[in-house]
Image (cartoon, rainbow, N blue to C red; front, side, top):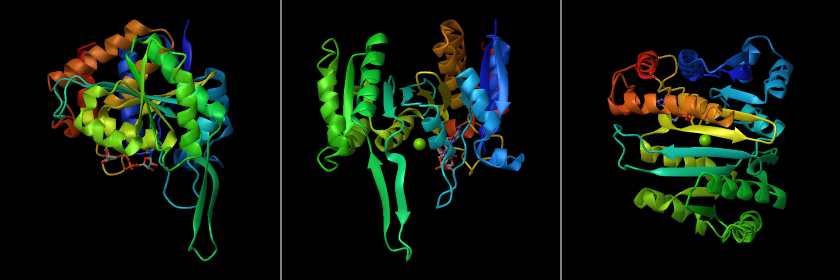
Amino acid sequence: STTPVTVIKGDGIGPDIVDSALRILEALDPGLDYEEVQVGQAALDAGASDVMPEAAIASIERTGLVLKGPVTTPSGKGYRSVNVAMRKKFDLYANVRPTLSMPGTQSRYEGLDIITVRENKGGMYSGEGQTVSEDGTRAEALSVITREQCERIIRFAFEMARSRGRRKVTLAHKANIMKSTSGLFLDVGREIAQEYDDLEHDEIIVDACAMKLVMYPEQFDVIVTTNLFGDIISDLCAGLIGGLGLAPGANIGENCAMFEAVHGSAPDIAGKGIANPTSVVLASALLLEHIGRREDAERIRRAVRAAVADHDRVTPDLGGDGTTSSFTDAVIERL
Ligand code: NAI
Ligand code: MG
């Protein structure tokens, strides 16, 4: 039997790197059945009247499984983020971003294995109350987080840590300044930690967390944090292992899961054919793992790691002169 998956190629480097992932999946033939849909600018260009067309929503509701390239959100008013809207619409409350060192990159560290678990719906990203005064001199945004959201994400992090045999969960917060929102998150975190005495737990103020991640990254295992902090910390973590081109992420909800890169559409290199597809390829491995195809997921990971370790046709972000498509060939040869 085949598993239906909704595919969103996205903008900028998105179509190139998603095609790479699809070629690799094709070579593995894990029995996926793709439904391609468009969102964002790509949807508008194709004649849709909304950035989240009905056809895309219907497909995602049907499959509950999405492989997604990055979608551009122009800065400034008048644009809502399709990414934020989709996370809300499909209740994708947990954003899981693994950072695993790869031999053969020029990163400063070796042997890192950190997972950032980011609350994906609330906080500064709730999108509520964003106003600018008529004369443009005053701007407001509302940061809203509920006890339920805190409980759900923190419990998710501890459960994930336990089921994957991890050692420690670190709560990253800013409760000293953001006393209400981050304070609630920290309070709930301390309560829930009591229920997991098989796991170590500690807490850290997020700015110090950034410093310590750079100086002593090996001290970290699972980090759970609120939306905005998780966004920043997970890019930082990607930087520790060799860059955004290597960083996959999963957006998880009860009935839907969406797998994508941590990074965006990379307009600075779009159209050049040199984006590193590893992020989305590893996201497709997370997807396979999510549907119980552990062995297929592992085959993809092994092949990618071997190609990077051999420096075979790697892309410029890893110091090579390969292209998205030649690196994809290198991975397929190692499957
Ligand atoms: P970005 O993550 O697209 O790029 C940051 C830097 O990393 C750039 O120098 C880029 O060239 C490099 N980079 C990213 N992915 C790479 C890859 N696969 N291979 C090699 N180099 C790579 O961040 P930026 O430029 O701030 O955002 C661009 C757009 O993407 C914005 O419209 C933003 O809203 C959107 N975005 C979308 C996301 C999503 O769909 N989940 C996530 C983050 C940003
Ligand atoms: Mg981000």
